[in-house]
Image 1: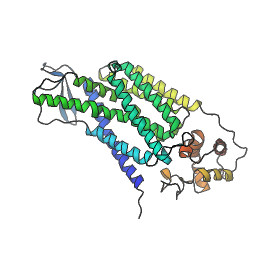
Image 2 (image 1 turned 30 degrees about the horizontal axis):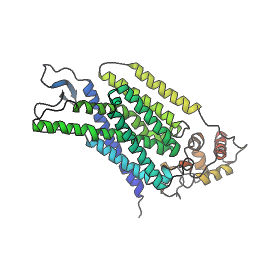
Image 3 (image 1 turned 180 degrees about the vertical axis):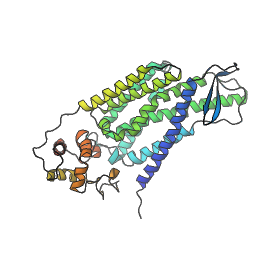
Length: 395
């Protein structure tokens, strides 16, 4: 009995990545909410910046935040770090299994750049490392002390990376690398700044030395950055299900607009934590989402004209040439032991059944075949579309 190792490994890593991500993002959202809802301690206590009483699960909780560090080190101190590390490690391994191991299928688009396998992998890694170095450079520059301007410059940098990636990689590969840049920056904030600064604070306390007051605000700055990058990276995680965005000629712009909408949503909730209900942020998010849908729908490349009266025989030949290697009960394409998502076009009835899906992926968005590795022509796509619009008739 043979096992499809890549598929099962991908399933396990994806599950782990999702589970760890829920834990990390949930903790992050909670602490942003907690920090923004702290009130002055009553009665005032030395070193305590704020406190919060809450009720949950049948019990009462009393949280206190110390401006620098408590007078005495507690016997048990929980560190929130493994949620972030596990999310990144599982995500990077998943990237390796799907997009680097399977680069000829999922990463390389020869119609854009005819990468070698190694060249594609090294380019992807270069973008991830370059993104992290760019972010760190911006944070450590005077720009890091100007939050709004920093956010704008970093957003432009990510948009530029998205534009470049969509010009050299497959649609899905480009989006996932923008997500990898953001995810690496977010975990870098935890690994390079937040945890080391907390470690320095603890060591200073144990040694009886004064705590450097700059350490806390530095960690807070990176935590705030992570707060605003969360929703964009979550969208990228699900983006491969929406080729209307990923396969669009202006996919980089659509990604930027949807990411800006996500940032606006987070800003609404962040301000709400402070007791301010700023509906304009939700309105802005809605407008950006609506404009994204308009651009995705209205801005389309000029398509070829379908041949008159395209018959099913011609359609079946196109499907056989460009689709059956993967979408068959017994795929012949390397890397597939079963048809993706269980969708097979072995019979005329199956082709007709999945005609709407074929139209969306092969005609409307050009997201299939993956990386256009079979070289489907515009005329073939137009003929498929013409047959489907005419009713997808088998005779």
